[in-house]
Image (cartoon, rainbow, N blue to C red; front, top):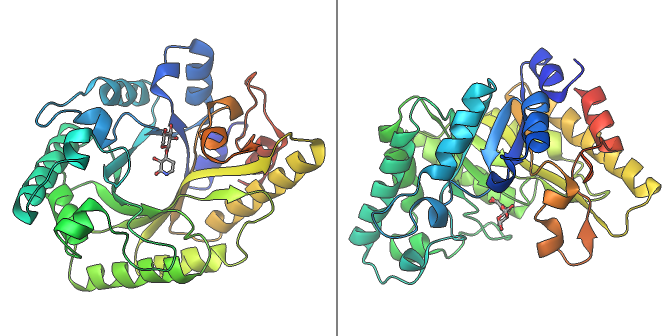
Length: 313
Ligand code: XIL
């Protein structure tokens, strides 16, 4: 294929991108997203603080815009995200809730959001970033208030709201075999044994240049061997700025390695990059001195990483 979406389709996979809602009205941005990608993820507009900013008041505008855009362009939508410790609205973050109250609030959020997009959103990140680096549970509001069972309950609520949606748990620094991915592996194995409706694991894959874990493919495969789908959900590969041609070449080979790890695992259904152009990326805001992590430059020109990913597909 001559685009990422065509090449991915030839392999039976999807090629996705995280979309910045405020850029969708820019035709150059929108046209490139439509041309190159077969799946879109909302970078922010489906997160709790955006979609239920006050209790009981839902703001569907951004989510609806993305779903409509995807339908017009024959793209899948990857839903992101329902239960996450970050980007919570103030009323939720600062509210003092009993377990029963938080359960009710969470079930309501999930049933409203998943219900609205039932049939339109094929996959959902139901729970995001539930683990610490050592493989123990992150002490989020849900963990502290409800305890270990909140994860199973969230998946049950999502399944009830859309029985056809594929439900994922998503995290970062779980690409290789390590303490964190071991913790996640043990969790999902237990959930499956209990009959919890979980269908996949999302590997965010926010990497540093030259640091694609050697065990990436093997790690994806061990989750696939549990009967789960695996998706590379948020890949970006950051470099210390300024960039130069050697770094851009290294980045190209890193994107190739990520693509190859997915393609080597038949249950790896797709790869989503976390933004279109380098200037759209969250990286410089969060990782001091780092940048240029994506496939296109700020003039919408393909970088070496684009060419290597296309060639690897
Ligand atoms: C980031 C967005 O890219 C930023 O625009 C926002 O300010 C913060 O969140 N893991 C996730 C994503 O699951 O939702 C995050 O997205 C990046 C890390």
